[in-house]
Length: 120
Picture 1 (cartoon, rainbow, N blue to C red):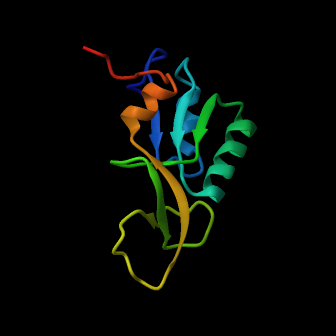
Picture 2 (cartoon, one colour; picture 1 turned 60 degrees about the horizontal axis):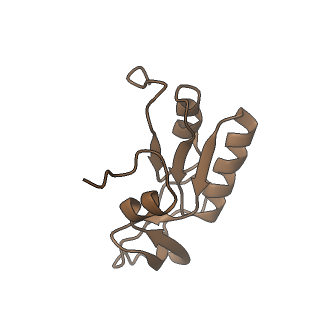
């Protein structure tokens, strides 16, 4: 936190419940950009942002090397757990859910998000 500046752009990849997003939102001037594909975690992240008055844009997607649909393997059922994976050969008798995935660089340009790559 001590290395952050008000004009910094902060992306929270796998935002979970938004702990880091909420803390950083108190320091930076722009909205924090959070990616969280798990619906329960994303909902809780949005609630935590509201409760804390934090300026956070939540995107319910996973960042990946391609855009489309994929399966998120749920290794722990509790909301807030970080035990989920996109690894396709993870087979430990666990459930999975369909989620959206996006390429970060393309998504940033498409949504005109801060910190987008230059076109040099």
